Amino acid sequence: MKKGMIITLSITGGIATILVSVLIGVLIGNADLEENYTDQLKKIQSDITSAEARVKDEESKLLSIKKHTDAAEDQQDVENKKLEKLQTEVKEVEKLIDQKDTITKEIDSLKKDQDSNKKELNKLSDKVKEKKAYVSELDDTIKAKEKEIEKLDKTIVRKSEEPIELIAGQYLVGTDVPEGRYQVTNTGDGTNFFVYDSSGMPIVNTILGDGMVGTGDYVFFTTTGDMIETLGPVKLLPIE
Image 1: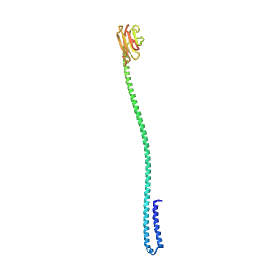
Image 2 (image 1 turned 135 degrees about the vertical axis):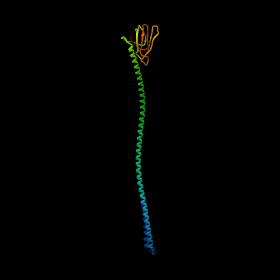
Image 3 (image 1 turned 120 degrees about the vertical axis):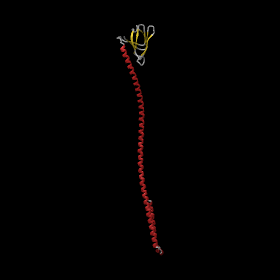
Image 4 (image 1 turned 30 degrees about the horizontal axis):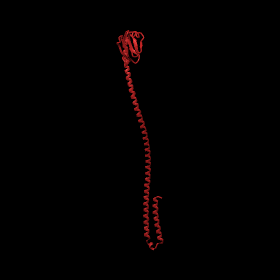
């Protein structure tokens, strides 16, 4: 039972008790009670009015309490809804944070791959530059050789005789090799080449090579009694 109902019943019970007492006094009272009946009735009426006022006041208080209670319940519902909305938004923010962390990790991984690729690209670029520089040197060497060959072609007329191929060793002119004029060229990576006269004095001392090692081909005269010495395979081209 609610508090408001208990208060209302208490007040109503008090009024009923007063009325019963009055009625009993009227029925069994003495002559003095009859004389004072009017005053008591007025007092009873006053008590009833006062009691009714108290009842109304209590009812007003109960109504106010109920309004405050309803308002508090409504406010609590509003707060609960706000809390639920806030919790939902927090979960959404947590999901966004997880997505951000994942994307950040992917970006970091891509940056590392990019840095690694840049390093590899720089290495390849350096190698390409080295190769280009080497190719440029080879081009210069080839051009120099072509010019030398062009000069030789203008100044040297090769005989129709077959070239003489020699391996590393010593050869006697007039016995192993006919005397004459020759253009000697190496057939390997390069070699030292000597020609000594009959007294053992060197008349040719050169290094045959490809331009980067040695001085390239060499033209010389030799007569019977000279000795040819080569430390690597060479080819003698008879020329006029």
